[in-house]
Length: 294
Ligand SMILES: NC(=O)c1ccc[n+]([C@@H]2O[C@H](COP(=O)([O-])OP(=O)(O)OC[C@H]3O[C@@H](n4cnc5c(N)ncnc54)[C@H](OP(=O)(O)O)[C@@H]3O)[C@@H](O)[C@H]2O)c1
Image (cartoon, rainbow, N blue to C red; front, side, top):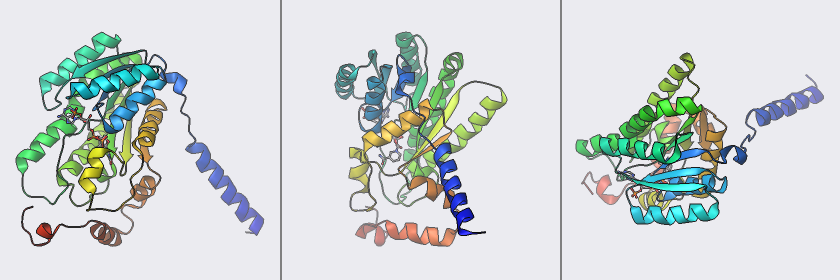
């Protein structure tokens, strides 16, 4: 093949990739959209609430801390949200989740977007055998997502709505210090991919977007990883916009930032080199090196 043909093939390939992954986000689609965002008192959830607010959505925001939610509510109203209601809840409680959904449906008169974002706090350290902690974390990070999606499904079916699930690169590629957290994210991947198949098989018009995020500069994430890893962290505001945009475009899976997609793609190509690199990218504390609980 001559140089011209090779060049033409390359340009066509790049153009095709560009077309397939073009940004189809139209904020106007979110004007008056009825949105429930969990874990909206801080971090990526808070930033997502602001993006929905700028687009003129109607919001219900939930988390445990009322004072923080009130500040988010005030800013959302300033930015242009049509309405904002608070629902205080600890997602470890099954009753609280049902109450949140009831409050959301009453306030919004239905639901277009269920954004599942909250996470329980977990230490970033080697596994020390705390089975009770992992049981609780599964309840907060995984079972509550399953529960909320299940009770929202009839409303989302009616509105041809969307479920947006915040997951992590750690839910695709296992890393050290994230045994419990990673397990909850792997579980989300399995459940929501399977549910998406079933909805398609039953012609249920609800989209599911799984969001695979790398390190984002939220306060809680930065506090956990400091001194242990030195990857660059990307801005929460940009991560939130990428999530909102992907959910609105009803894509199956989104990746943020840029390096996450190639890592997922090449995950199993060179397993020994991958594991070697992962293990060298994480710093152990001196306690952990000696096998002493920190
Ligand atoms: N930041 C990253 O580097 C990163 C990377 C990959 C994926 N992600 C994913 O992105 C999402 C958001 O992460 P983030 O860093 O923004 O988290 P974050 O800053 O720690 O915020 C967590 C949110 O969840 C709420 N929350 C905590 N425990 C709760 C409970 N028991 N019941 C109800 N709400 C609870 C918190 O509010 P209250 O304390 O007021 O309840 C807060 O609003 C998560 O799903 C995370 O796994 C983040």
